[in-house]
Figure (cartoon, rainbow, N blue to C red):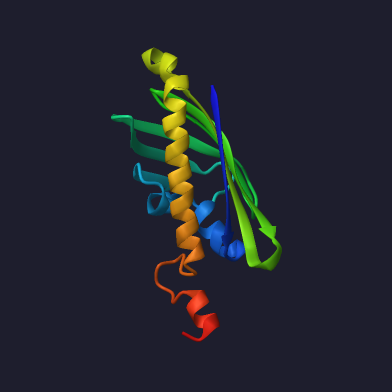
Length: 160
């Protein structure tokens, strides 16, 4: 099993960060390899919520049914398994001074079946992918328009 952890600090409200980071239906906005994310019931993470993640990685299609095991206003933990992979992990938010928020994503992943020996080999690629995805999420949140339909808050604050 490989563990991948990424952290970003953004200039955003805790509510805006939670709306994107703790609602898996928003993942396709910031995770490049996500093809489809089915979330039932829809909305922010809650205990028992079912998620089916469909993504393409390393030239393969992965379908991973997942369940939220813990959910709070600033964190969520999940566990899932598909034909080719098992995963569990957490997403956590931490309020910081001066209107900043730390986003922390931890993923424990293991490929299954004939792909299992490739887990260690593919971990650096998945780590880079997660880093790029977190960068994309940080850019959305730092833009001050995480919903995509609001004027950037920085522009409003600066009078532009």
